[in-house]
Length: 76
Image (cartoon, rainbow, N blue to C red; front, side):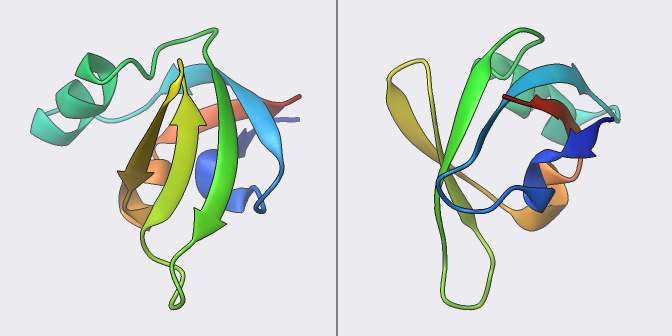
């Protein structure tokens, strides 16, 4: 069963299956290294739940919840 990145809790991780959508936002996400097969670890959520801090490929990155909803993952 697939989920989106925004459904993971801090401390959980997953493998990217697909980045949905089109346009500048999706292109920016892919340019930052979020591609199929990449492992993503959720570090923490901001106090109000947006943005989400994740770690991938050795660096930390913050994503808005709407951006995280575009990233389909398979829990690891």
